[in-house]
Length: 305
Length: 280
Image 1 (tube, rainbow over the protein chains, first blue to last red):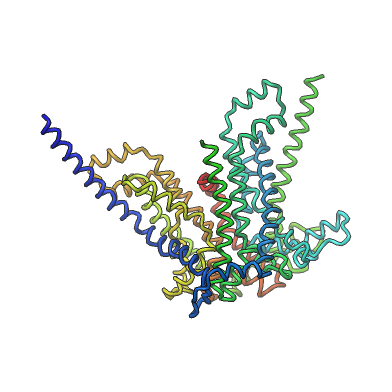
Image 2: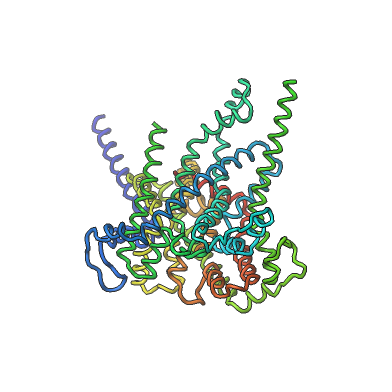
């Protein structure tokens, strides 16, 4: 008897080890096409970027280790500090508006609006259309004699600004466009979140005599907290990475009024060929994103626990 | 009394609700309508106020000029070509990897997947400089291969498809195995046919991002004959700064393909945006 079971056991063990071996071989074969590309074009570059950031690599021949020199120089370089400041202003000036407006419109749309699918589809247009085309259109609309100023003039604004060539308004102009472009996407995220709120909570609130406002404050918004948190984090990360609209609309100008972090990284790497220095700038961007992501990670963990 | 108060409050709320929704919808639409309308106008007409939404004479020559004078047909072809190749490659590689992550059991699987997903956190701007060095070593700068290679292998695609595969019951796989199907057979004969909707969703996200991509083509392509439509449009605006009507026509052309796909596959779009969003 005992002998039998021993035999059976070892046989079983053998097959399961063989199965693991076979499965593992198959799994890696299936992953290979994706992994090889991913390895060469993403993973290795991440490591290289870290290494570059400690060198004076000029994209050509010179590549000596310079220790922390790049990182120290960054904070004495007004091009970088201005770009960093602008990125933060841009983030603070867009994220709250995008989040609040998209929350507002999704709650309204979820509250029985006739034709909601049509409105929803239209509001996603700006998110889906190419950023270049959208930026070019806004650039024209912001023109001195463009429709925006004509409208401002019509409602009595005496001297509407020359939006994009004025240091004081250029960044604001970009921000307005980005808020406009972002609302639709976050509305979709919120609508998905709204579907998950149990209806009995609303019924209970109604029994307590709650009106629409009370329900919003005491049921909807608390239930949406995780969605809001997620949306805010995503929106912040995207804001840190803004490049194309600014590159096309203002090129970072006038002066350095709209220069942002990625604009500076692009300039220093692919225009000035300071690969080492630009990598250090990119690491700062990475660090900023990492911090925001980690906050989200620990927040989720705390909520789940 | 009380009842009447509530209903009048409700009326106000309903009016406000529609006012806000309609106002936002219109503000989303107006720049696009303005773009289309301007694309049929002469420079002079574009900046007259009040805005004439429907031009008196439709200047179709803005479109024919863009199409004939700049090399827009070439740009259009390049972009379609890149979009198709990248989307197909990405679908093949990501469904295969997703199959391994979802349906083949091996000890380190879940840890590996988490590690793989963690790289989604790294922004493109961090990778782009060393990536450029690698592509240059391969001698592929200023070729379409550069864009294909850097965009065909995305963790995001794997993530989306894996989520869908996870929903397909393992019993189905076991039954197929008993019937004598191997992993390749299960992948190609069972998983793929069952996952059409997930594949369309993933493909649409890739198509949109490839079509609209600007930074990577800007870095890699210097020969105007290799330009994508976005790069070409940007070039057009900086070269012919005063040909407003033509620039608007070029913008319309660049947006239309994606808007058509969007209108046809709207539900997939919204699904894709949301499922991309739950990753948090």
